[in-house]
Image 1 (cartoon, rainbow, N blue to C red):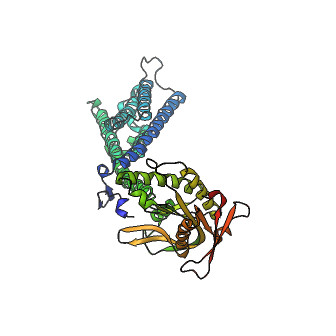
Image 2 (image 1 turned 120 degrees about the vertical axis):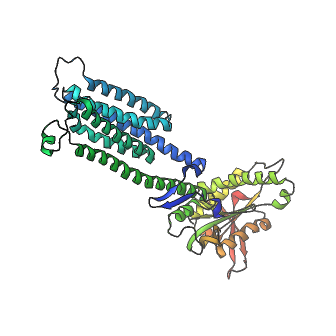
Image 3 (image 1 turned 45 degrees about the vertical axis):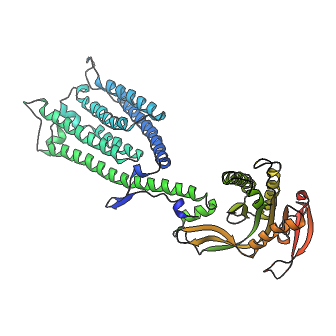
Length: 452
C-alpha cells in the first residue's frame, strides 16, 4: 500500500492562532462534508432564534405595562412581529439548505438591527427619554446573538455580528446624546448615572469594548475549533480511504495510534486462514484483453468478498487472482473455523453458473487451515501493507494447490476440523500429506458438498 494514495495533502500554515487550513484547497468531497455540517448548524441557529423571539414575546405578555393606555402605537409588538417573520423566513431557508453566505451576513446584521430596534423602542413604549433604553438588560441578548454564530464554525459570521452590535450600540448612544441639543443627558457622576436617566459615556464605552472583546475571543476560539473540524474531517476521510487498502480494524488502529502506520509491530493470534485461487487462470488471461481481464477480476473479487465479509472474515491480500482472508484476525471471532468453511461453501455457490466473459467461468479452489499467525504492517519507507505471516499461511496456500491433485474444490486441515463442532458439516478424509517445513504429516479433508 502506498501511503501517499490515502493521504490528503492540505496546504496549511502555523501561526500564533494555531494551524490554519485553507478551505479552498480541500477536495470537493471534504468541502461538501464540512458544508453539510455547517448547513445543519444553521438549522439549529434558526431554532434558537425562534426560541429567543418566543421568550421576548412571553416576557412582554406577562410584564406589567406602565405606558399610557391611551397611546395609539405600541412599538414592541411590531418589532417582535417583524423579528418573528424574519426568523421564520430564515428557518425555512435553512431547512431547505438555501442560505448563501451573503444571506448569513445579512442575517447577522438584521438580527442585531431588530434587537437594537426593540431596545430603542422601549423609551417610546414606556414614554421615557431615549437614555432610558441604555440601561435595559435586554442588551445582554447581544452576546447571545454573537455566541450562536459560533455554531456555524466560521469566525467571519461571529465577527460580522459582533461588529454590527458594537456599531449599533454606538449609534444608539449617539442618538441619545444628540436627540435633545438643549440637554445631552451626559454626566460624570456614577451615582447620578445609576439613579437617573443620565448618560455616563465611560459606561457605554465599557459596553462596546465588552462586545468587541467577546467577539474577538469567540472568533479566535472558533478559528482554532474550525481547524480542528477540518482536521477531523480529513482524518475521518483518510481512515475511510485507508480501509480500502487494509482491513477496517487495522485502519482504525492506525488512525488512533500514537505512532501511526509503522512497520515492525506484529500480533500473534490463532486464526483460520482461507486461501482461494482460480483454476487455470494463466490460460484464461491469455484469451482476454487487459481491460476485460481487469474487469473480470474486479467482478470476481466483488463476488468472493461478500461471503467472506458476511461470515466475519477479513481479506488481507489480493495476490494476482488469489485471495488471502483471515477469520479471528484482526477481527475477533470465536467461531472462526466454522465461519471460514461457511464462507468457502458460499463462495462456490455464488460463482456457480457465473460467466466472466463469453463462455468463461472462474472455477475457484480453496484451502483452509487453522493455527497461530503473525499479523501486522510490513514494508519500508512510504509503502506498507497489512498481511499475516507464518507457517500456517504457507500451509493454507499448499492445501489450495492440493485440490488439483485430489480433484476437489475445498481442502481443509485437521487443525481446522478440530475447531468445528461435531456434525456441523459432512467431511470426507483425503489422507495425510507431507508439507515442506512441517515436522509432521497433515491429515486433510474435503467437504461432500464440494465434490467435483
